[in-house]
Every structure is written in C-alpha cells, then in structure tokens.
Figure (spheres, helix red, strand yellow):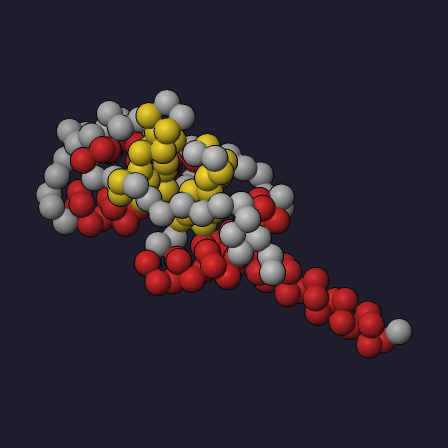
Length: 142
C-alpha cells in the first residue's frame, strides 16, 4: 500500500504560509502569486490553521466582509485535519472524500513537513497505475 511518504518523494515540497494577523487580501495575493488554492497559517513553526479558496468564498464573499479589513485568523479553518508520512494514500483519500476537503498538512512529531492536495493524490495514483500497466504489458509480451 502506497504511503504519503512515497508521494512526497515524487514532488517538490514547498510550504506556503502566512501568520494569523495577515489580512485575507494579502493571503489571497500570496495564493495568486504562487498559483495555489490553500495557505497554511503558522505561528512560528506551529500550525494554527489553513485558509482555502472555499474559506474565502464561504466566509468572506457570502458574508459581505472586506478582504482588506479581515484578519486571516477570523476565517481560517482552525486545527486542520493532518496526516502522517506513514499514512496510506487510500486513508488520505478517504479523509478527503468523507470530510469534503482538498488539502492535508503532513505532520510528524508535531513538525509540519508538507501539504498534499487531492490533485497530488490523483496524480500519484495515476502514475502508479500506469507503472503497473507497463510492468504487466512487459511481462505478458516477454
């Protein structure tokens, strides 16, 4: 069974974060510049939350709040669900499906290591399946 650790070995790990005092507007600018749909909210090295495009749509836009005047801590998802490097991809996909979330911070020994997205998971699964197909084709044709 494939694990988060194996997935992380196939991608470059870049953590993008802001502090709790960052305005929503400034967080959105970071997301736009980095072409990402979620940001980690850190206090030093401690994970405090996550802010996603969905948070923006549901907690800012629909409530008529100002992005420039709202601090990220007011609208972030506090205490996000996290996974371990040893967790299986199937386990993570189950969490994402059941909880309707698209990003999972990866933690080990209370240290933030990475964040994986549903897109990372799907890409990893497709590549793994393609490798299996290629191996089976090679076996059959030999």
